[in-house]
Length: 435
Image: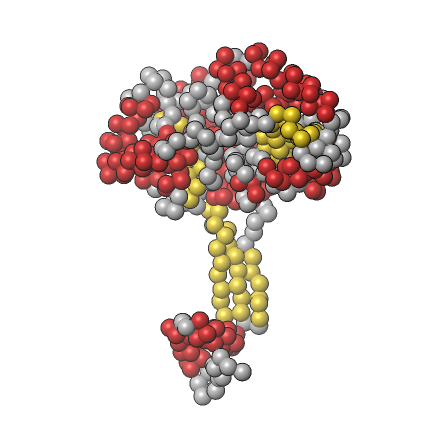
């Protein structure tokens, strides 16, 4: 049957994105021209902070002293999971070589980026988990220098727990800079940093636009929009757990879509009734965000069977996809488009966001159709090499010469011709493209 919407979104996550490109471009241009002084000007304007930008060892150690022991233990627990998962991912890539023909050898090398810039949001919330996810994976990848950057709070600086986390995970430099000026400092190599080869980490629309503009000059993890989540459920799902999982993700922001697709109408109806009841129990700002996201962005739909559930998931290509249904192995084998998959009610998106191990920097706005999330692999370049004996070069040169002339690339053809002449003197070759 066609998808039946019991609740349909009235807005999209990009309705009020606005045109921030010109503003961001202007800031980047000014900072590139003006260097450290221009970055400090914007730090004073936007961060309302005039403290030390590059944290000293004493400041980092003082921040660590301010973090309660229990929170340190939790951070270390999450770090250990994320690090070990990243190490396992790295083990899936290896240098290799293959002899394609006698004497013709080609290979692959995995080379980490030299300098990585990791951004951790720190506005309303101090995103400890973002530092965990970005810095740890860069360290495991083997990046030569890792800069961690986060917005300071006025007259306070970066939250001590975030400083402790960035240092624990392996940041070589920690910057108290927010938004566009923070990304610019890492990309342009300000404050004594090496110029970043790659910029990673989530942020608001200004951070996302700065990364979009800088892409090409530097690598980025992905183009990111507001976070989104989809739950697939059947009659075995617990409506109270489903409702809370939707609300938990809706609190990210007013423009963060949450969706439920189910084969069980009574579940859908119960969740529709329950979500508005539980949102007010959140702290005020969280409740405001969740209420707006639920009102404007949320969708609840009923379908006939699990195949239709899977098709909805593939069509939406959500950042987070949570299956609360029977036969989880079937869904694991069938589903194709998601940033990260959560199987069963025993896990939840918040586990992945904070401490479980897989990375939480994930594709949004349907980008899961063509890319995965941040991983140790994003910091590594898979490059190739080749080597040949003179005997092996002969057949390659012949094919290259003929293909090049067919394409009209005479210069290319002659680089093959000269090798045939030098390596095989007196030997005739048919380099015509006819016959």
